[in-house]
Length: 161
Image (cartoon, rainbow, N blue to C red):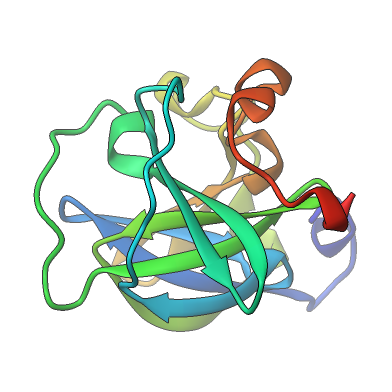
């Protein structure tokens, strides 16, 4: 994403989603696909924010509840709940979100880095704050969704390593 900020006229394409009425986004280059709700198999001894894993065409994909990771209240999945599959390092992770709404292009000049933004945004979880007409869009960093210790606790596909 840093390269996008350097050039003139470049845009970052962002997949926009909501959680608990909050609008967030993720770089489209980090999104593998978007799935409707599918059965999630729970596993023992996982972090509190982890829900389990899904079978994606024979591949084991861990699923996390982003609400819990962000400290938001739990709620049952609704009719528009989706699994947003994102690449985090070498692994694909399912992120449960309330709804995926659109893809927007944000001019690089209108994206603040976390160190430029408000104090609450100075978390490794966020990669930027996009200024879209009429609203702000918090952009998450999928590579920072999990700490190395948390990654070890999640189920993963041995064949993908």
